[in-house]
Structure formats: structure tokens, C-alpha cells
Length: 282
Ligand SMILES: [Zn+2]
Image (cartoon, rainbow, N blue to C red; front, top):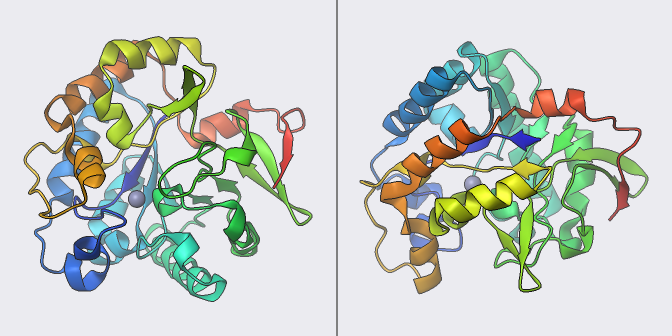
């Protein structure tokens, strides 16, 4: 199964960088979210594919029309936290408050319970597993934050599976849709979203997608915005990951969506026999 998801955030929501870290910095940048969402909406309309959108609470508070548009078009919405901070830099209390705020904002706009979650930068690691407890206590039923390989923001290599599973933490259970990777020369490579998707040629992405039985994508509106301003003085790797392949990314994305069948998380959830998947204790 190939699952289509987006993280709704602005072009300046770049992690690990002081000039894009908080609302004090965000207020200095122009907004590009409407045009960038419209590009995605228009294409999804054309191909009639459903997707799941993980929306920042800050976006929902600032531009509630975006959330209304997602819902009125029949797409699902989940939370990507309110303020897009790396969770392992937060205390459990601060994270819980931020999550609660995002859920309430989304519910106030949509009238529905937000039950899907994705962490900014996939920032759940073994040392902040307490996140799962908070997710469950706030009514989150499905998580898509596990990055089952080492990465700059942490990652969760001990999850050690590229398939949906029941994640068990401290006796609690949560449905998990991890990001997937492919092995190249014995190393895991991510290719299904963000800078990694923009970096690899389409022929590789197509080949890896054909080979896998599970693909979890994670696109951002900025991934397809070749005209976005460049944040000055980003560290080299962050510049590379933020801006590589922007001009060809949307064509690549259109090809992927045309060559393969995609579904949203709700559809995937229905298709999976949760009694039969692996239970992974973290
Ligand atoms: Zn994000």
C-alpha cells in the first residue's frame, strides 16, 4: 500500500536553525501557504486521490481557511503539533500543552476529533518515548512519527520494521505508520518525502516504490515551491536538504501519483488487519 500524506507548514518552518525557530522569527517572513496548498489541491482534484494532511496548529490558528478547505474537499486532517518544535527539546508538560492546543484548534474548526499525529522532524527517539503516553491520553489513535533509521534529528532505529505495527509502550498500544526506507549498500535510505524525495532521480524512486509493499510519503507544500525565498546562513546540510531539487519536485510528484495508486491513512487503517500485524514494544 502507498499512503499519501502532507505536513502543512510554511516554507520557513525549517528545524534546527535559529532564524526559523520560533514565532518571533516567523513573523518576519512572507506567507506562501495559500499558493502552495492550491497547487496540491488542484492536482489531487485532477487525479481524484485522497490524502491525509498533518497540519500545524499555528497554521490552523493563523489561516483557518486552509483547514476548512482540506475538510471541505473531503480530506483527513491530523496534527503536526502547534509550534513545530523538536519534541526531544521539550519537557513532557510543554509538549502536552502544545499538542492539546493543536487538537483543540483543529477540532474547533472541523468539528471533529483529531486522531492522527506526526512529530516535527520525526523527533521521537528512545529517550522521549513518553510522547506515546501523552498522545494516547489526548485521544490520538494513529501515529506516523517513527523514522526507523538513524537521522540528524534522532530517528528510532530500534523500531526495526518498515511496516505498520502496533506500538506498545508501558502497557499502552498505539497504531503506528512509520516512514519507510530502502537499503543501499547496507544502509537505510529514505526517499518518500522532503529533501530525500527531491534529491533522488525519479527512476530510483519509481524502482524502490515498485519493490516495496508499504510506502509512507511525507510531502510539504514548500517541497514544490521553486520560488520560495532562501533563508540565509543555514548550515550547509540544511541548505542542501531544504533547497535541492525544488524545480523538478512537482513534476516528479505528479509522475509518482500517476504511476502508482495512493490511499489516505483512513483507507489504509481499514485495510490492515491490526490483529495480525507485529506488536513492537518500545
Ligand atoms: Zn514539519
